[in-house]
Image 1 (cartoon, one colour):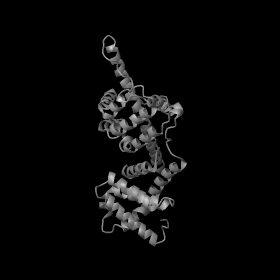
Image 2: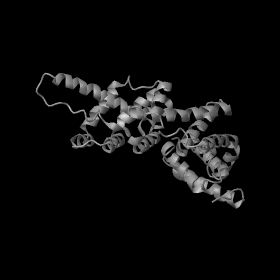
Image 3: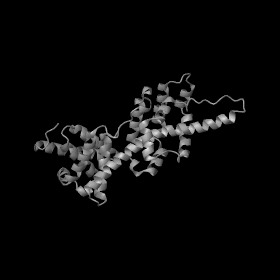
Length: 307
């Protein structure tokens, strides 16, 4: 689940903190990096549990409604939403249950938010179309939650604030993690039952090693990378360049010079995109121009041979 885009972002955050907090113990900083990445995986599981929690809240509401109608002649309450087969499969998922057992995280203390989200769901056109459909198939049940998640969970300011209160590590993670939740929903297959695989924390050992090596190279070769940056920003006083810009360029140079199998254009694009989101409005173009100049000099001097 933890892809290289998230790894790069976490490394930039941890390198920034490494220089800012004065505690320059590289081993401790590396442990903090991997702990931060593990918290992103916790968020992935926690957001999967959100869909179950909303359904359970709905179940309580519907049961209460049914009890009120027992002595009346009103039409019976539909249980279609709470009988969702995708949610039933997710609820018994072995990996998700293991997460609950180990982390002991639930949504039980956030009923006000669950109430608000459920009411938004029932007011949505997606819900109304689903409830009006004459048949209930697994595919329709799964598609309902893919659409609901994309429209009501993906960009939800109340949820963002709630998650931020629970963990500082989740401040910048949700947007990326949301894409993995949506990918997981699409991959669910009814025939897999409780054994349906969730996304692993790391795709493979190569990505874990990428994180470790990029972080260490960024720090250990920091003076050299800053020298390159300074040489290519001679019209600027390096102390006046946004510190986040320096850190982003330092990480980018570590990747460009340490990973021959990653095309330079890929590295440049990734770090320019991060700069646009996490630094100043002009940082993207400034970093792109500076790194492009450094790459040209390195190639000219024979210090960089990849394309």
